[in-house]
Image (spheres, rainbow, N blue to C red):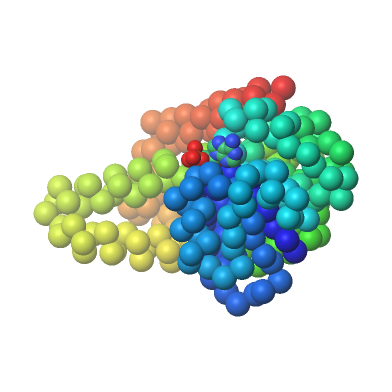
Length: 258
Ligand SMILES: NC(=O)c1ccc[n+]([C@@H]2O[C@H](COP(=O)([O-])OP(=O)(O)OC[C@H]3O[C@@H](n4cnc5c(N)ncnc54)[C@H](OP(=O)(O)O)[C@@H]3O)[C@@H](O)[C@H]2O)c1
């Protein structure tokens, strides 16, 4: 695969870092020159990664092109480029629909949307792909996990789950701050939380058929301290507010593509 990137920012850097973190010479990478510092940094760190003189040169030297500019710039940057009918285009721009991207990259025919996450740099996490695309699924599968979906609505709904990271870390920070307020050593508290939550993250794999509520009940001993916090948070409406926030993000994502 001759892989080109239009837009060399945080996400492109994460994908290229994951891709070049293991021995596989089947993919060469051609980067657009912006951001210059990130592009030249990647090219100097990794074999078979080069910086093209401009965006058109990326297209001309690639068979697969990932679009990784910010959504606000997409309509300015993409239509000025000449795509070939045989280009395989993957848009990483979550908030622009496939239909709209198709008009911007015509006459390219093969088109997919993908939503990788920054942890792809460590070959962790999952990338959602729509519509199913075996080559792109194989590419992202090597960098973590690929989840292919048929339906753009399913893609949008799954992408809402990616809006929960910051509040997850705030949850951990609340536990950590409370431990500090009890004079627990900062590093000890952090280490303890990290190891607990790593173990919890693995728990669903030990019971692949169990729903999350089953695990919640398993960890909430009747009359115990887990049950107490769960009940107090639920009674305060915290989970209803959280579900409402997911709805709000979903409305925002779907409205931006209307
Ligand atoms: N980061 C994530 O976790 C994530 C996750 C999922 C999807 N996405 C999507 O992926 C896309 C890229 O996100 P990002 O976080 O990588 O953004 P970013 O760090 O801002 O990267 C975008 C890059 O595009 C470059 N650029 C600006 N004008 C350009 C032009 N005319 N031609 C080519 N490149 C140009 C920018 O260079 P300068 O720095 O020189 O302006 C910037 O480095 C966005 O659409 C975003 O919504 C991101």
